[in-house]
Image (cartoon, rainbow, N blue to C red; front, side, top):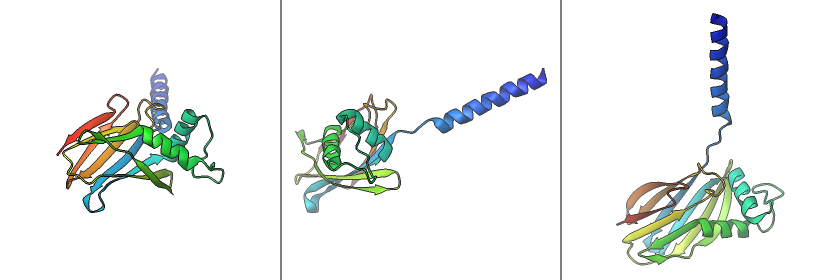
Length: 167
């Protein structure tokens, strides 16, 4: 009887251990900085390559093959369209037009650079970030801001897609 309990306990522990190892963590990290001297807002978004690749395939019905030798020529255009839809900024109650600059690869992460022109004092800053929430219900989008020398961080999810910061 004791051996039976030991076997059940070992199987339970094994099942728990393997289920944690299999579970994937879905997260992006976006840094948003207001740079008054350059009269612009700079955005750097870090997204796992494999997750973004799946998101682009789902959205545009194309295999993009991000960060591989098979990456399709229109990859930057698709990333730009995707990010312009998924990240939106409203500053002082005015929506901003984001401009995609470029991307680079760092290990298994794609770093995407965007910017928006802005020259006035910022009093309210609304951030919408729904990167990959259509693909993964447990996607977490961490947003760090540095605006008017005030640093703030927020967590956006499938259910909490935006936040309003006041300065």
